[in-house]
Every structure is written in structure tokens, then in C-alpha cells.
Length: 367
Ligand code: OSB
Ligand code: MG
Image (cartoon, rainbow, N blue to C red; front, side, top):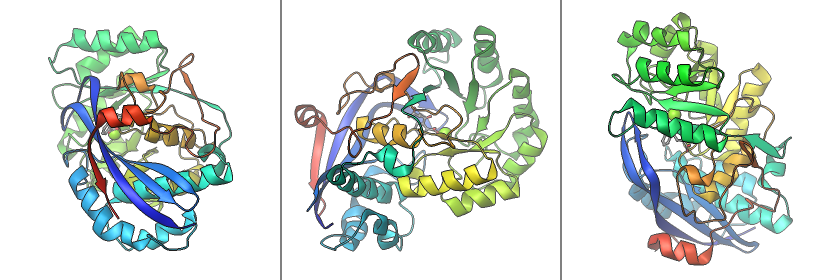
């Protein structure tokens, strides 16, 4: 196939409620969607960077620049297959979310053309997946706000709850939710908010029978996570620290983590995500699918990858309505706490032209 042009559509997606983590509060998510035109047809990719470099170093303005000036020129006009893309754009260091978005758009175009779904391409073995939900820190710091929000997700059918934590918002909120939901699979995510000095403090979470604790310490502090994992009964899971299959394997071997959050954007795309999955499956390490508040485009790919056999824990694969009252694609709607894995060619979701126009704040040709 041949890549003919790439256009970035920046959409502004108002969140149904503010999403607060240890690194900030978001009320509108700005997402870059890539429309990739090829000689086989059009495909869509979602770049999961944010407006600001707070979750990781990547941010939307930088993603657009690196795509236009460094990544897209390496594939434009060349005869290639989607499997060649990681190698062709691999020499560009860093910027995994930008690279992953382009790979996704190219793969979507190709799979639509050949009539294969994302799930089938990557080796899915189920047509429906369990849904988890990521619950932010209340902007009013009020435990009743958290309780009400969690209850609304339980009522909606979610099968696993993840609480965002940070120093000052950790043991007590987790206790309250555990007492409210004694049998619910429950986990916490600190987005690097703690340090090696907090190990004893974090061990107080052990009494709540959590599935895991996600990225408690700085992403570069592998020893800190190893020391925590040695002391804490709750399994340590890494998100931000995991960048590739090789580095995930190193982190596991070293003892820095016992579970891996796979987020395709963070690791440079779905092909890299699949490699991490295969490595973890071979070693008996559980993985689950993380999320970046994706629109229906990225959500479709997440739901597909989450249907692979190694994804044994429920992911942050929630319904579109968890974040958006209006999605750019047909929304993902939960049925009994589960989402159906798209089986249509490619992603199985595509932006609805009128809605895309309505949500777009900037359209930028990148080639
Ligand atoms: O750390 O998992 C995270 C959202 C944005 C950035 C980082 C994270 C998150 C979430 C939400 O927890 C996941 C989702 O449901 O999309
Ligand atoms: Mg996380």
C-alpha cells in the first residue's frame, strides 16, 4: 500500500465531569485524530497525547510537529505494508503516541481494505470484554462526591473500579469504597505521586484486598518500585514506566512489577502493545488494557486488543458515556458491564462526518 496524505483533526471533547488525577484536572479533552488516505482507502488513528505534558512528556502541539516534520516523511509515498511502519519510523526517538497514531491509521486503512477486523488481526479469542472504570479524585475533595460517582458506575454495571489516589487522598477513600463494595474488584492508581519514602504508608492499602496498585512512584524509579513490591502484599503494576516489550521484560525480571498496564499509545502503537502482551503471556504475567479517555476511534482499538487471551484483568475500557455525552463515532455502549468487540473490517468505528465537524477546533494537513 501507499500513503497519499495525512490530515490531523483536533477535536475538543467536553468531559461529562472533570477528571482529576494526581497530575491535574481536565474538563475538556483535546484529541488529535489522524485521517490517513492511502491507495487502499482511508483509515483513522487517534493520538492519545494531551494538551499539556503532564501524564507524559508528549503533548498535542509537539505530536503534530514531529508527525509532520519527522515521522510522516518516512512513510509518505512509499510502497509498504503496515508491518513495515514501526521499522520505518522507529529511528525517530521518543514520541510513541505520535508514532502509534500513524501506525493505527495505516493499519485501519489496510484492514478495512482486506476485510479483517483489528481484533482478528491481533489474535483475539473473545467477542465481548469486561469493563472497568477509572474514577478521578473529586474536585471538591468530598468523600460523598466519590461515593455517589462510584455508585453511579456500579449501577451502570461496571465490573471493576479503579480509584485515582495521591498523598492526602488514599487510605481513607479506599477504605470507604471497599466497605461500600466488599466484593468488587478494586484497584488504585497514583500516577507517580509517591516516592521511596512512602513505602510503609502505601502498605496500609494492603488491608483492602486490591487487585493491584498502579504506578505509585516516579516512572524512572525502578528500584523504588522493586522495594515497594518486596514489601507490599498488593501486586505492583506499572503504567508510565512501561515503554516497550524489552523494557517491560526488564522491569518484570528486575522485580519492579508483577502486572503490566498496556496502553498502546504509550508504547508506540498496537503492534508494540501486542509484543508486550505476547511476552507477558509467555511469562504468566497478567496484563490489562489502560485508557487515555479515548474517543470511539481509539476505544475501538483498545477494546480489540483487550480481547486477546493475555488480558486477564478488566481494563479501563469503559463505555463512551463514562467520558463523553457526544462521541465522534457511534458510541460504545455497555451491556451487562461488558463491551462487544467490533468485528467489522478495521477498527469498526469511524468518525461521523457531521459530529467531527461540530467537535473540530483545528484541521491541519500534515503532508
Ligand atoms: O494513568 O491510567 C492513567 C487517563 C489519562 C491519563 C492517564 C490515565 C488515565 C486514566 C483513565 O486512568 C483511563 C480511561 O478510562 O481512559
Ligand atoms: Mg495509570
